[in-house]
Length: 66
Image (tube, rainbow, N blue to C red; front, top):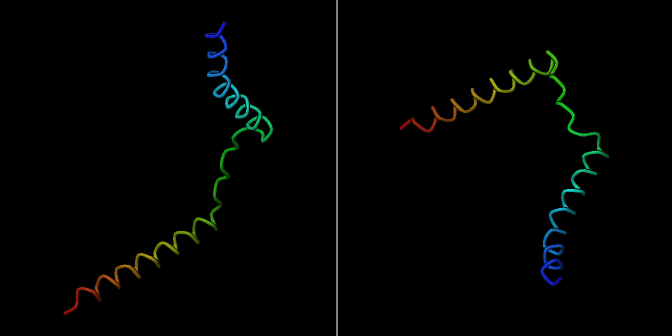
């Protein structure tokens, strides 16, 4: 009987955590896939990336000067 009590006490935490995760996922509707980026957003991000690369190469060129 004592061993059964210990077993129930040890299993209570993982079982409770599993139930909480299940109900949380169920309430939020599960994992929703990310929205695909539209063309305008992609163009904006690519332009920003080009600006950052140019600034980084300028900074590297300045640091290599004597």
